[in-house]
Image 1: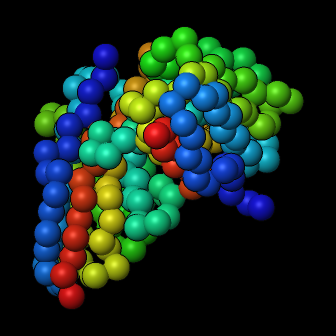
Image 2: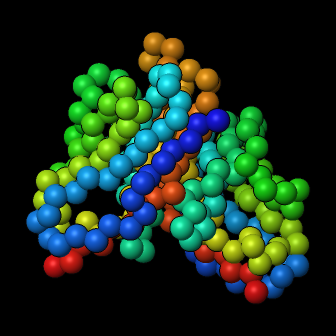
Image 3: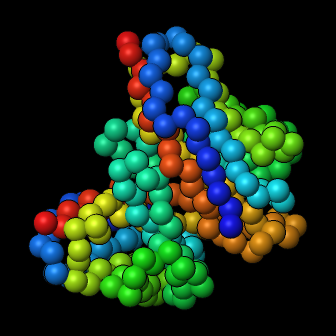
Length: 115
Length: 119
Protein backbone atom coordinates (compact mmCIF):
# COMPACT_ATOMS: atom_id res chain seq x y z
CA UNK A 1 0.00 0.00 0.00
CA UNK A 2 1.05 3.55 -0.66
CA UNK A 3 2.53 5.47 2.26
CA UNK A 4 3.38 9.14 2.51
CA UNK A 5 5.95 10.53 4.93
CA UNK A 6 6.16 14.13 6.03
CA UNK A 7 9.34 14.28 8.05
CA UNK A 8 8.80 17.61 9.74
CA UNK A 9 5.84 17.51 12.11
CA UNK A 10 6.38 20.98 13.54
CA UNK A 11 8.28 23.85 11.93
CA UNK A 12 8.77 27.28 13.48
CA UNK A 13 10.19 30.11 11.38
CA UNK A 14 10.55 33.84 11.48
CA UNK A 15 9.07 35.98 8.74
CA UNK A 16 11.20 36.18 5.58
CA UNK A 17 12.88 32.86 6.30
CA UNK A 18 12.92 30.24 3.56
CA UNK A 19 10.73 27.16 3.86
CA UNK A 20 11.11 23.60 2.69
CA UNK A 21 8.72 20.87 3.84
CA UNK A 22 9.59 17.31 2.98
CA UNK A 23 7.27 14.75 1.44
CA UNK A 24 8.30 11.25 0.41
CA UNK A 25 6.12 8.45 -0.88
CA UNK A 26 6.63 4.74 -1.29
CA UNK A 27 5.01 3.79 -4.61
CA UNK A 28 7.32 3.85 -7.63
CA UNK A 29 4.89 4.01 -10.54
CA UNK A 30 2.99 6.89 -12.07
CA UNK A 31 1.83 9.25 -9.35
CA UNK A 32 -0.34 12.31 -8.94
CA UNK A 33 0.95 14.60 -6.20
CA UNK A 34 -0.76 17.27 -4.14
CA UNK A 35 -0.07 19.73 -1.37
CA UNK A 36 -3.01 20.97 0.66
CA UNK A 37 -3.05 23.72 3.29
CA UNK A 38 -5.36 24.18 6.26
CA UNK A 39 -5.29 27.66 7.78
CA UNK A 40 -6.47 28.00 11.39
CA UNK A 41 -10.23 27.59 11.53
CA UNK A 42 -10.53 27.02 7.80
CA UNK A 43 -11.01 23.97 5.64
CA UNK A 44 -8.40 22.17 3.58
CA UNK A 45 -7.62 23.80 0.27
CA UNK A 46 -5.35 22.87 -2.60
CA UNK A 47 -1.99 24.65 -2.79
CA UNK A 48 -0.63 22.94 -5.87
CA UNK A 49 -0.70 19.68 -7.79
CA UNK A 50 1.42 17.65 -10.16
CA UNK A 51 0.06 15.25 -12.76
CA UNK A 52 2.69 15.27 -15.50
CA UNK A 53 5.06 17.54 -17.39
CA UNK A 54 7.37 20.08 -15.76
CA UNK A 55 8.42 18.63 -12.39
CA UNK A 56 8.65 22.10 -10.87
CA UNK A 57 5.12 23.14 -10.02
CA UNK A 58 4.04 26.65 -9.08
CA UNK A 59 1.11 27.06 -6.73
CA UNK A 60 -0.80 29.83 -5.04
CA UNK A 61 0.71 32.36 -2.63
CA UNK A 62 4.27 31.92 -3.89
CA UNK A 63 4.56 28.23 -3.07
CA UNK A 64 6.25 25.74 -5.36
CA UNK A 65 7.08 22.06 -5.23
CA UNK A 66 9.51 19.89 -7.13
CA UNK A 67 8.79 16.30 -8.12
CA UNK A 68 12.00 14.27 -8.03
CA UNK A 69 11.11 10.82 -9.30
CA UNK A 70 14.43 9.21 -8.37
CA UNK A 71 13.99 10.32 -4.76
CA UNK A 72 10.23 9.62 -4.54
CA UNK A 73 9.91 13.15 -3.23
CA UNK A 74 7.65 16.17 -3.69
CA UNK A 75 9.01 18.82 -1.34
CA UNK A 76 7.18 22.09 -0.82
CA UNK A 77 9.16 25.34 -0.88
CA UNK A 78 8.68 29.04 -0.41
CA UNK A 79 11.61 31.47 -0.53
CA UNK A 80 10.24 33.93 2.02
CA UNK A 81 7.43 33.02 4.42
CA UNK A 82 4.89 35.40 5.92
CA UNK A 83 3.01 35.33 9.21
CA UNK A 84 -0.12 34.48 7.21
CA UNK A 85 1.49 31.19 6.08
CA UNK A 86 0.95 29.79 9.58
CA UNK A 87 -1.08 26.66 8.89
CA UNK A 88 -1.08 22.87 8.66
CA UNK A 89 0.33 21.48 5.40
CA UNK A 90 -0.56 18.07 4.00
CA UNK A 91 1.09 16.15 1.20
CA UNK A 92 -1.05 13.64 -0.72
CA UNK A 93 -0.20 11.04 -3.33
CA UNK A 94 -2.37 9.06 -5.71
CA UNK A 95 -1.33 6.41 -8.19
CA UNK A 96 -3.89 6.31 -10.98
CA UNK A 97 -2.45 3.29 -12.75
CA UNK A 98 -3.85 1.15 -9.99
CA UNK A 99 -7.30 2.50 -10.77
CA UNK A 100 -7.41 4.23 -7.43
CA UNK A 101 -9.15 7.54 -7.06
CA UNK A 102 -8.20 7.87 -3.42
CA UNK A 103 -5.18 9.90 -2.41
CA UNK A 104 -3.09 8.85 0.56
CA UNK A 105 -2.33 11.75 2.88
CA UNK A 106 0.69 12.37 5.04
CA UNK A 107 0.30 13.20 8.72
CA UNK A 108 0.78 16.89 8.10
CA UNK A 109 3.31 19.53 9.09
CA UNK A 110 2.37 22.33 11.42
CA UNK A 111 4.05 25.58 10.38
CA UNK A 112 4.20 28.55 12.74
CA UNK A 113 5.63 31.80 11.41
CA UNK A 114 6.58 34.43 13.96
CA UNK A 115 6.18 38.06 12.88
CA UNK B 1 -23.16 27.74 -2.46
CA UNK B 2 -20.17 26.92 -4.59
CA UNK B 3 -18.28 24.76 -2.12
CA UNK B 4 -18.70 21.55 -0.17
CA UNK B 5 -20.86 22.01 2.89
CA UNK B 6 -21.15 19.84 5.97
CA UNK B 7 -23.54 19.80 8.88
CA UNK B 8 -23.53 20.09 11.75
CA UNK B 9 -20.28 21.97 12.23
CA UNK B 10 -20.02 20.69 15.79
CA UNK B 11 -21.65 17.73 17.47
CA UNK B 12 -21.34 16.73 21.10
CA UNK B 13 -22.89 13.41 22.03
CA UNK B 14 -22.87 10.89 24.80
CA UNK B 15 -21.14 7.57 24.53
CA UNK B 16 -23.49 4.95 23.09
CA UNK B 17 -25.64 7.36 21.10
CA UNK B 18 -25.95 7.31 17.31
CA UNK B 19 -24.91 10.32 15.22
CA UNK B 20 -25.51 11.28 11.63
CA UNK B 21 -23.22 13.61 9.71
CA UNK B 22 -24.19 15.21 6.45
CA UNK B 23 -22.23 16.28 3.40
CA UNK B 24 -23.43 18.33 0.42
CA UNK B 25 -20.87 18.06 -2.37
CA UNK B 26 -20.24 20.55 -5.13
CA UNK B 27 -23.00 20.28 -7.70
CA UNK B 28 -22.04 17.92 -10.51
CA UNK B 29 -19.21 16.23 -8.65
CA UNK B 30 -19.63 12.49 -9.03
CA UNK B 31 -17.00 11.42 -6.51
CA UNK B 32 -17.40 11.91 -2.78
CA UNK B 33 -15.02 10.98 0.01
CA UNK B 34 -15.20 10.81 3.78
CA UNK B 35 -12.10 11.23 5.93
CA UNK B 36 -11.43 11.41 9.63
CA UNK B 37 -8.88 13.84 11.03
CA UNK B 38 -7.58 13.24 14.50
CA UNK B 39 -5.07 15.44 16.28
CA UNK B 40 -1.61 14.73 14.92
CA UNK B 41 -2.84 11.83 12.79
CA UNK B 42 -3.38 13.41 9.42
CA UNK B 43 -6.31 12.36 7.27
CA UNK B 44 -7.64 8.83 7.59
CA UNK B 45 -9.65 7.64 4.59
CA UNK B 46 -13.04 6.16 5.45
CA UNK B 47 -15.12 5.62 2.32
CA UNK B 48 -15.39 6.70 -1.30
CA UNK B 49 -18.52 7.06 -3.43
CA UNK B 50 -18.76 7.16 -7.18
CA UNK B 51 -22.31 8.21 -7.85
CA UNK B 52 -24.46 6.36 -5.34
CA UNK B 53 -22.25 3.32 -5.04
CA UNK B 54 -19.29 2.86 -2.73
CA UNK B 55 -16.54 0.95 -4.55
CA UNK B 56 -14.17 1.44 -1.65
CA UNK B 57 -15.28 1.35 1.96
CA UNK B 58 -12.08 -0.20 3.21
CA UNK B 59 -11.36 2.62 5.60
CA UNK B 60 -14.45 2.27 7.76
CA UNK B 61 -13.00 1.35 11.18
CA UNK B 62 -15.83 -0.90 12.33
CA UNK B 63 -19.34 -2.05 11.52
CA UNK B 64 -20.64 0.82 13.68
CA UNK B 65 -19.75 3.10 10.77
CA UNK B 66 -21.88 3.26 7.64
CA UNK B 67 -22.51 5.77 4.88
CA UNK B 68 -24.91 6.26 2.06
CA UNK B 69 -25.36 8.62 -0.82
CA UNK B 70 -28.61 9.33 -2.56
CA UNK B 71 -29.33 10.95 -5.91
CA UNK B 72 -25.63 11.17 -6.61
CA UNK B 73 -25.49 14.15 -4.30
CA UNK B 74 -25.94 14.34 -0.52
CA UNK B 75 -24.15 11.79 1.64
CA UNK B 76 -24.66 10.86 5.27
CA UNK B 77 -22.13 9.17 7.52
CA UNK B 78 -23.71 7.35 10.45
CA UNK B 79 -21.88 6.24 13.54
CA UNK B 80 -23.83 3.91 15.81
CA UNK B 81 -23.17 3.41 19.51
CA UNK B 82 -20.50 6.10 19.53
CA UNK B 83 -17.33 5.58 21.53
CA UNK B 84 -14.90 8.17 22.88
CA UNK B 85 -12.28 7.14 20.32
CA UNK B 86 -14.70 8.26 17.59
CA UNK B 87 -14.04 11.87 18.61
CA UNK B 88 -12.43 13.60 15.64
CA UNK B 89 -13.12 15.99 12.80
CA UNK B 90 -14.98 14.25 9.98
CA UNK B 91 -14.18 15.73 6.59
CA UNK B 92 -16.01 15.34 3.35
CA UNK B 93 -14.51 16.04 -0.07
CA UNK B 94 -15.87 15.87 -3.59
CA UNK B 95 -14.32 15.81 -7.02
CA UNK B 96 -15.15 15.49 -10.66
CA UNK B 97 -13.23 13.10 -12.85
CA UNK B 98 -11.17 14.64 -15.61
CA UNK B 99 -9.89 11.93 -17.92
CA UNK B 100 -6.88 12.35 -20.13
CA UNK B 101 -5.33 9.50 -22.09
CA UNK B 102 -5.93 6.68 -19.64
CA UNK B 103 -5.09 8.53 -16.46
CA UNK B 104 -8.01 9.76 -14.40
CA UNK B 105 -7.37 13.05 -12.68
CA UNK B 106 -9.26 14.34 -9.74
CA UNK B 107 -8.65 17.28 -7.51
CA UNK B 108 -10.53 17.11 -4.22
CA UNK B 109 -12.45 20.00 -2.73
CA UNK B 110 -12.95 19.75 1.00
CA UNK B 111 -15.76 20.86 3.25
CA UNK B 112 -15.23 22.58 6.62
CA UNK B 113 -15.72 19.37 8.57
CA UNK B 114 -17.85 18.26 11.49
CA UNK B 115 -16.14 18.21 14.86
CA UNK B 116 -17.52 15.25 16.79
CA UNK B 117 -16.98 15.01 20.52
CA UNK B 118 -18.11 11.88 22.33
CA UNK B 119 -18.33 12.35 26.08
